[in-house]
Length: 433
Image (cartoon, rainbow, N blue to C red):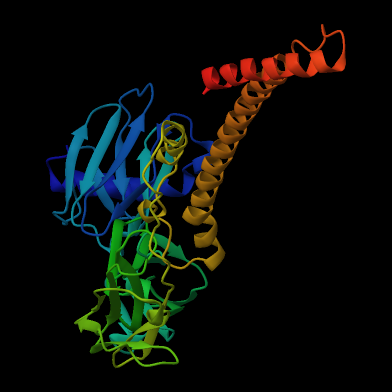
């Protein structure tokens, strides 16, 4: 029957007569279908499914109530509709190259007693095109405000635009949505950003959120110019700057455009005659106290100029303790071996004067004081020993000198005995010597 045009026409008239008596979607019992969302240009598949079908006729109609398929027969002369599957439980039809004009409600009808009807809605998504960022100019100076506009043309539904600077999302954009013909929209988003030197060559990204497309974005790079950033560093020495030692300073200037000139000068005074300048470096072969002061490096470009200062303070040369002369001083001079020389430190070149005086000079005074104390103590011990020795021998001499006078019977005898004792004492004295 479906192969004969006359029979198909009679069936179509019969369907039209029965259409007024069909049940509404909420009253259907065995007929099922699903809504379809498709991107423009792709394929939409419409399925009319029947549960427990008793070989009732299934047909599919378009939004204008024109029959697309009656069972497995296609009365509508639109070759974009193709039969995918036909059985007693399903009628499945594909629609290729979908356009916005295909959007609408499609009807599935089942000839039962009473007849049933269900509908499926085809929604066509149209991704935005011509995503463009507009800026007033390409080159900006640091601190300027940049106004950027991003426009998403002809999309359905309206696109959502987000802004990023690198990987950081930006807030504060203003969005305008304009309705166009054919249910489409034009979206325009504007953002203002104060650019910094860190923004140079960093992409500003306009990203679109839309159900029809993923990762749709466009980028804009901003050329940011800025005045130089100047940094002064000490190449040599790494520790204290001492008298008689060399000094080397380096000046690094970074700017856009590249700094045209780098200049060294001495604040509040002229540069010493023995200072040597080569490109961005400053050399002093032998420091002295007259070199003390502030040295400045200046750099400039078409945007502006900037500088950095280095304050030089020349310290006294390190002092070396005297070599040991005795065994006693040898034990004390080992102490400085545990005290690091201030010239080997990594302290900055600018210090308070008292820090240098209380460093190696304080250590020398302590060593000298210790040596003197040991020597004085040794001399006192020696004097005490000699005093005790002389005192003991002197008492012995006087005792022998008076010996013999104690046993005399009278004064004359005592004198004679005393003289004899004196002679004996002289013998003792000679023996002592």
